[in-house]
Length: 571
Image 1 (cartoon, rainbow, N blue to C red):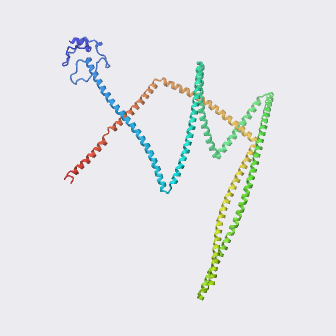
Image 2: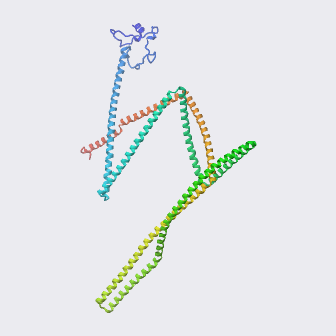
Image 3: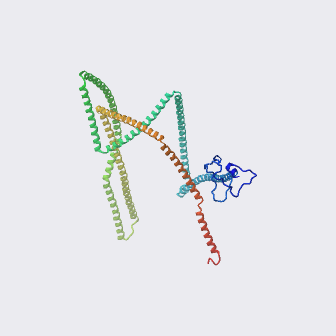
């Protein structure tokens, strides 16, 4: 029996008629037993055999045959089924929670929309109550609502117009994109029909165009920065008189140096020329000068025509100014006349006021004297006046009262005239200031036109400034051309360096491994973040401390209530 087990190893299956030995272990083979290595099971653990459960936990099964492994497999399958069922239940719960969350979210959005509408209605009602509280009528509110409704209609029409314009623009853009796509496809078809050499040339040209476009963009950006910097420097120079004077002197020095270099160059050329060459050069110079004189004469005639046109414009402006001045002169004379009347009135106002005041005081004193006389007569005679005397006194009193009212009305009229004339004087002063301002503006325009005429009439100065500007722009063009070539070479070298460095990095195994490790690290970071979020959510779900505190609090309250309700204990 031992030899049979040793010969077949663990792969032999016992017959079904034999009872499996489940008690004492079978005798182990000795060192001289015939063991064949190919009969040993080779598993993922190697030749050491399958490591099952830990030893020392009791008697193990001595025969680990196919039935044993089928039992283990069934157990694992059952565990997998249980785990699958658990995961399925969790997935169902998660899907149910997700569906409930979506429903709750939709409900929350609906409630938020309803709340927004109700809030708007509440604002309208509050505004209506405020208007009613301030005394505004229903008609005013209705009119305001109608005005707002009309304004909303206009805004809606404007929005519709803008929307229609936007749709038109989008359609135009789509049409343009479609045309561009068709042109691109047509170009690709044409390129596809070319030979491989021509296609390679086309691709090279496209790459060169893209590189040149990038270089142009960079140079334009640098040029824009340089212009901004130059503008800033110019502003600083304009704000400083010392810097302005220095710039002027530097410009003058550069111009003188340029002229000196030209004269030196001409002298060197003349010293190296023979008499015949010098004569030919002088003839060419004379021809060139004659051509320049012809051009200058043409430009002079054009300039004279422009001067005549400007003089005609100035004459028309002077005529318009004379017409405007004639109308304004009449208004000015009228205002001066009113001003003279007001001055006369103001000069005589004090005297008239004092005269009228003295006259009124005299009348009042006369009335007082007459009343005193009447009192004296009455006291002396101790008799009432007769009817005729009383009527006479009444007539005198009415007359004097009428005179007093007349003097008071005259004084009020004089005061009103004073206020009116003061207002007219203020208006006249304002009009005079306005006329002075307009006259100064017209004089400024005339001075500007005269200065422009002088400027354009000085043909030599214009020619010199134009020559200087052309020379300056030529130098700037040369400098920019040199800078463009320099930057182009620099970009080419930088691109080559970048491509070579990129190729070296791509060929470097360490760099490739670092890239792979970086991607793995990012993946692990994402996994860690998701796991931390999952752990935090589960921790929040399983946090029983608030519920425990609430339960303890309720329990203490309930115990205190029970103690109070027990007779004899609460007391």
